[in-house]
Image 1 (cartoon, one colour):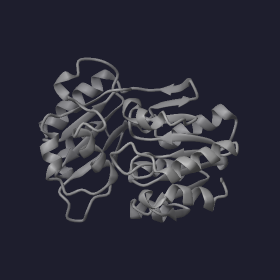
Image 2: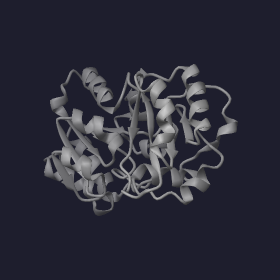
Image 3: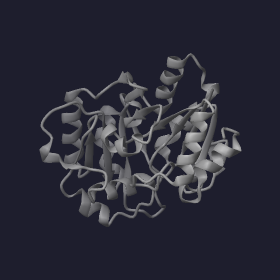
Image 4: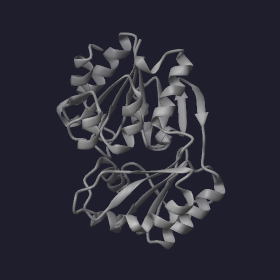
Length: 273
């Protein structure tokens, strides 16, 4: 039995959508019928992932590893300290950084984020995910509607990396600033602030321990730099042709893009189906 981990945006579905290509649906069903377990492994929270998760996966690693569910059992759940959320938002907003915060099922974003993204020169799958989210396709609420509740990670977007300097000085020892690749002359830096207590790779280890398996029994599919901990951890790694060139250079295989039936091609390449 293999444990197969799939990123969502840019890997399983075109970025910012919930439409699983028919070829991928067929491949996942066949893999499960052959005795393998297929998990989502995503930066999305449970709410944003739900339309895809309802297809019938064996579990989910959500929020970049902060929340892990196997079947009906939650095996890991680690939100940020509340005081960190408050202080980080204060620092980031003071430096002109646009933010979204993610709870287990709800996401809240700065009011003027949509205007910023309309003019942002960024072409990675995470930028596109937020563009679509702000159109209402993935569900996002105004930041002022957030009152209370656990927050797991902060997504950050800004024109210059220097706008993150203050936050880095205070928090980089405890938080990974997981930044996406951007165009050489792009005007949008984007990434996530993630507690160093978890990441997609550590979450995969937790799933392996649940089944009594080793990481040699794992396969991971991704496309962007927030998939790096997964790609480095799994036994066999595959990156989509629409993905990050740096990530491709670090993976075992490159497969066709999500729009060109890349997931099915990868499953066939490894003999999963």
